[in-house]
Image (cartoon, rainbow over all chains, first blue to last red; front, top):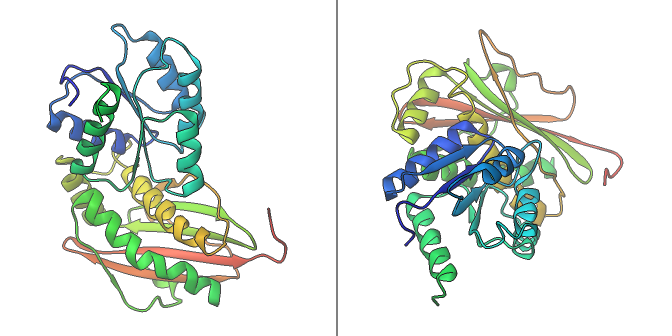
Length: 133
Length: 163
């Protein structure tokens, strides 16, 4: 599992959802959480973060800059290309999931989600980035 | 209207599933979808999403009283909100967003081609949902331990395919 000190960036246009995701992460044990209201604000936060962000959780359907556009920007930048990026979204149609995979998403969680599902995906992503099975 | 039936069926699953999973609040969908949206329960906060597809456009509206909304929200976030305000009113939009997106997956498998859409929030004193005239409108009356609430659905078939 990720270190509890991992710096996490949450991008979602719904404040209530950001609170819910933050709450779940804090219950798991994470403490360093940054929030952004759309992909553009998340991109700004990513660039300014020092120490750098180590894990990104993003919604798909957001105004100004969508989650998929944010993902593409992240993956196109050598500074951020290796940061684990989880799409946490209500968009659950196969073409969208395939689009996200092609864009380099690390994992995909469909809303509505349970804390257990989120934790399970985090474990899977951590295993993947640390070279496990 | 066959298309309306196609829209209604997934909602029987997605509404309870969304509330149960996201807010830990079991919900039952009551009744048989009467065409009586003018008689919906009074509400204090609502979210509306309009969407367009292949040969149809529609509206979904989730309407909740202050009592029900705050109880559901407080359970979801482990908070103790007493009032609906700028900070907490968008939870209703997220609930509708999940209901719409999950239902849309079912609808689009049936070839309806509905698009991505962002819900808006309506609140204030005596808020009103203005559904388009014409088409078919139904109310899904729902019940949870905190009281009843409504999901409205309006569907209008269009003559030309829009995409």
